[in-house]
Length: 147
Length: 195
Image (cartoon, each protein chain N blue to C red):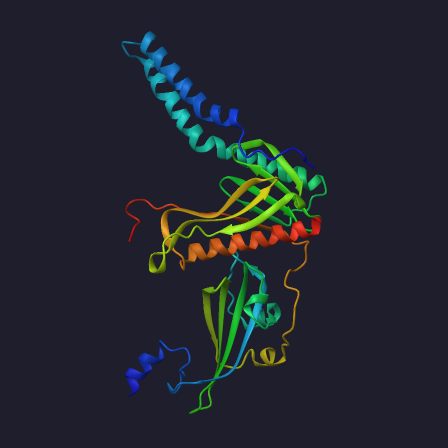
């Protein structure tokens, strides 16, 4: 089973990266990222950043348009007991999601944060003293850009 | 604060922008034909320089004027106590919103010499247009915008434009829709605070 199962595991986020078994979802949580708005996404790989800048929400509808969101899935392998946290950053757009990045934390870096955070009705509008500048995008292709 | 109706286009500016360089080029061609019929340096200058300058003017002139006027407007707003919470630059117009005071500033590409500072309660309707055409797997769009009406005048601000049609789930369209929804929300907030 070894090699083929390992290859298949590479395409399954919810498979254990140690024993290639399907993992159970222990916990799921959605967060808003009030500091990150459309067109201003910056990639962060440090768990500290997420600990400081995420606001827990109950559902996607609570997140204002143009604000990035972040979904946490905590997996546990029923065979070897390995735990893994999957973090997906995405831009919610009506009923769709524009996924930016998927990160994995294998050493429980965010466990305390996830289990302590309380969901409620946070004020995600932010302070009105903030200045934001955005612009329209233009995508003009020449005749040879068509694929 | 402006109370006059919003004018998106300054017709004399638009016409002179298009036709004055064309008229000068035609005049230079005529002069070249009449006075330098046998060629020479004068003919080269009259036949080459005006069309080149005209093309440069059509490509860059409007953008430079609009950019300069937009910068000037931003400076004026700073001094007048208008707090620009959110600025959105598009090809045809720039929208600057002061959410806290419920105010809105506008400047248009084809009317760059006139800027408008208005109370946001003059907005009567705000909506987004994803430009979707086609159905099922053929659905797509080449333009996403947010629109609002001031005293019945419809103002469209493009958040995404392309000469190619993109699928509705493409990242360009999703980003455009997100920006348009965000700006519609910002304008709605400003309108609510302005009442």
